[in-house]
Length: 250
Image 1 (tube, rainbow, N blue to C red):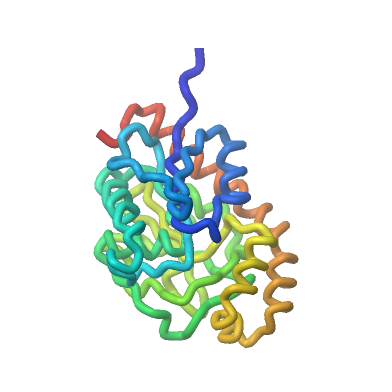
Image 2: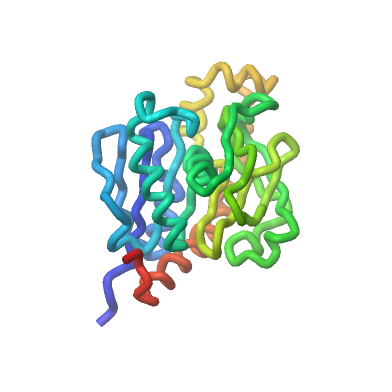
């Protein structure tokens, strides 16, 4: 009899950034998603006991927020720190990647070049070629950007995997299995349209009008799926390997 599917804890700090297509890709790859939507009051588990992997998404909060400003992020930081200690397969996206950088000894600050917004490209670094998740990606994969803060310093011992002309720290790995990506791969065109409508400051800083940001982001989504759905399947392989090894967080 086959065993239970590997379980991925999915932390959704804000309903503005749901798992969307990434959640669908991971479910189709055979993972059981345990989604915790903090904006609707879902509690976070105290520990990662029983989780074979962790996904932390983004939101309008800032990694610079203190506990009084964004109390919901306290538990997220705690789980990311636990994942680092255990080298649990983890994918942290945008805000998640910034929180991961902080708990790992890196540094986040307000982006010195201003917001990075809309459809763009990132470039793989040399170390990415030997990475099991990033190695098969094209040299300059399409991504969606929507962030005001930047990862100024990576966590201690991190390996840089991708950069952009605006901000160098776009993707990184800590240990063997913990990943952070500053950009978004999970979006739908509707999600990006909502962001572009809401974040008028970010769109204005991009020197593009709202309609252009939305149109370009919508047009690139088929290419995003072609590149990042297989990436999600490779991450699911890491989570399943962890489950098979019986090395879930003690």
